[in-house]
Length: 183
Image 1 (tube, helix red, strand yellow):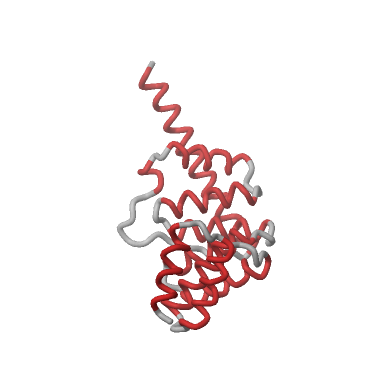
Image 2 (tube, one colour):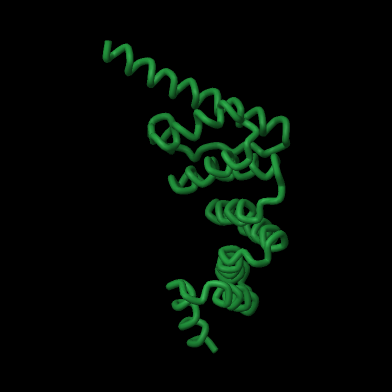
């Protein structure tokens, strides 16, 4: 009886993952989201059996056009270091409702992690265009400008905006010390 129950739970989970991936692929085809593959040798998501991920995938199979659920899946895959999958879910979320400044920035961060620096810059800028008060966007814009685009002057401006918005964080304190030492 226990084995049968376990088989039903695992079978239900795997069915949810497969259905969710089909929904994800369907969204890619319908909405023009580019397909992203897993890097060679990377563990399959089903092998990880993360309970929170299982729950999110199951919900996504029931409500596939929920942009906030797609964002949560993107966040979860980003936490797991599965950046290509994260991008896919962030892109799906943006296709469902474009005005999500935080998702634009999060997706930009993932593109940076994947080595697509120009795309990272564009996505972060888009997020900041939609919400210029998004502190994390300014911080990450500074990172991209400084480390990837060889533009320290603009990076420092972006970081100064971040410090103004988040003056009490440890990142702001460290940035402030660094900015003062480079003048």
